[in-house]
Image (cartoon, rainbow, N blue to C red; front, top):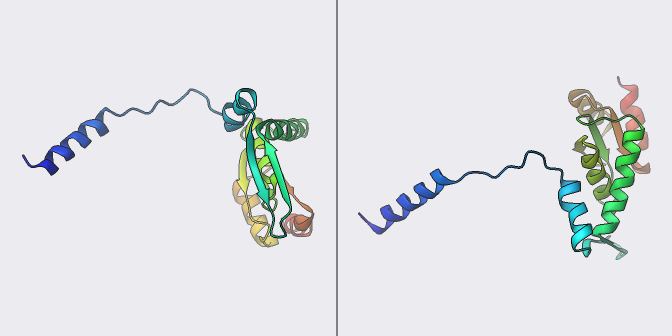
Length: 149
């Protein structure tokens, strides 16, 4: 048996023996963000824009911001499993909103702010989205998309 055949045999045995250790439940917001905030609160996000403006967030900042988002969407009646479109530019709040929606159990549909109203309407109808979280730059497009229904 050649060295290559031996290596392939060893690989096949390892691959056949491999088993995923999948937890019964997993929530990125709770199991990653909140854990890091509790255990090792250090830098989580270092953001810079094209003009050089900077914002740095620690894990505890992400935890508290995402908790506020989760509480807000729950108060608005968004339930676990509900699809939500996110139309925000790539700013720190984008991350807080995504993690907050995950904490609330929502299905996150990240979308580019460059989408046109017909694209937003298609995504909303196709996904069954119950809400859109958008920044000021996307309000006109979201309003136009909702008029298309």
